[in-house]
Length: 239
Image (cartoon, rainbow, N blue to C red; front, top):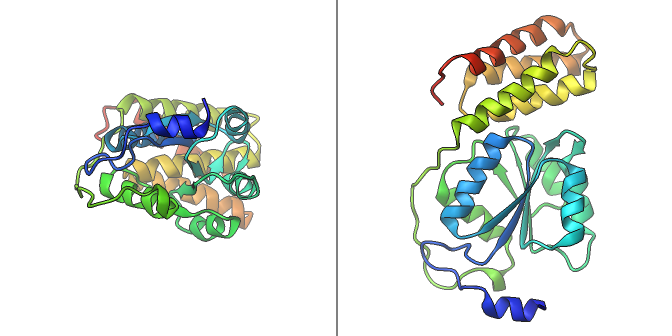
């Protein structure tokens, strides 16, 4: 089936589901953040596929071409900016390339790499998600007519949050974790903390990142962060 035949069979977007017919590849290592995007796509009418690292995303992109990609800026095997820059150079270009991060400073980096838009974490409000995708799309792919604006917020699965915490705990407590991996996991936890609006965890993760960038003592901050992550696994925390 060619693109014209596929387009003819694709349902048109509606006022309440303005992304109907779109396929979105989400490149995100956090299961919690990805579940939020799954729910946002579901409510908006878009289909979603997921990759959890650069390698997996590149493998997906060799097989099919999504309408849009949303790329987390901090991935286990590199920066999302690498993939953004690669995709801006591919012809035909993917219609919308967006970045996402819990660190607002990454917006400028993503846009400089060629991103069409930026989604700041936490992701949850349906209207903001839809607006960001629609702004990034070429005009001929945007739905005609009025769009139904809603203040609906999605609530990701708490088990996805705990899975993320378990993954972070394993990396933080491994005796041979190197500094590069430690910085990655601290940024990973920061993104989850922002998504879950957990300020205490966010601050602890930030201290690890700052100590790493300044070359200061890091072990006490690492131990503090590991303890808080473990608390989130073992207690019934409201998210």
